[in-house]
Length: 492
Image (tube, rainbow, N blue to C red):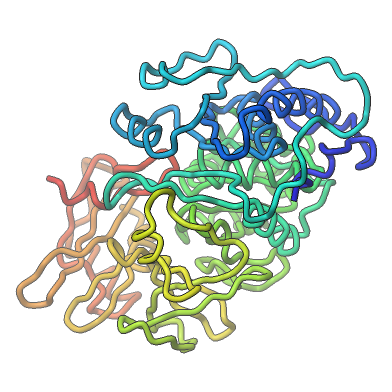
């Protein structure tokens, strides 16, 4: 398992050593240069011993990618740190993961909470002396930790999900199978590098397959268009990014052309609203492919580009992944009517090994060897999975019905008077829970009425799914990945 990156461990043998591996703005490294920089740092990190961990100050810069690759070459687990993490959360992560040092870009300003750790600046420009294998440790077992990635902490302090090397390799290879991802692909994205989506899929994925990464640093539709037009073949984004792209299409014909020429557009981390699917496809002739994963599981399913899966689904299980739906009592069912809701459970080589220092939480997360995702879904007649939301925040039990918030949100977003929408449940003496819609109006001076929105939903879905209450906001609360923070909606 030392060869997570064949093109780096022996760039000459892998071919095309002078091909660009990483590009961040006007800064880039070829595979030969990346092998030299990461290899030099790997030799330095190897002296820390493989029982330790290293923290990585994960700014969207070239150095972050080099640091992650170097640690993996050395067999040392990486703890990516979100540069926007608050003082209390950072203190918890450091105490829990106990890294031996912190890797950072030279000149990066670190918070006071990291002052007690040895700092190692990440080298980028290292003299390249040859094309042989890079320095590094002995072969590493597939069960050895590669990353400790901390969850969002919505139900308490963040938990460190320990991701082994075999999970990283299994997920990236399964995505290559599903997407025909090869060394000829050039991936464009602007995702944060402290998370699975941006770092593992968006940086390590191209490097494992011998392709190229172009990171925008800061997302803009113009940057997406420029890089795709300049040779990019794939785009990774989250729904907020694709929404901004969709908003720009009418006034930017070059962006339309660039998207139309891309081989693959992928959205993840949250459901992409159906209106944005429709606008992008209508303007460019390209559809956006959705996939489904979690920190603990990496990737579970994906729509295949050559399939006829309809927008709103996240496809079929990836190679090696088993997926089932279970009822409230834990019993498995295989109803494929697009209506019957169950919790997703998965198993396979993509799973984490557990939560760091939390054996009880790890045990509670599994039903035998099946991981309890907490995500609720239905299956269509062809087996495609459609997620309706999280059990804790998106499953509404109203009048004896199970209602998924996601389908109501999509219908609300199809109303011309709605710019953003979220749906939650609220306690109700009669219904158990009532459906509440949180809406950002397209025109704040003339928002649609609650009655109008309720009738709009009832006309397209079953009447019991209509919102009983509508609350208007200036903006919906979102986290760094663009996900709506529904728990914050009830804090008023």
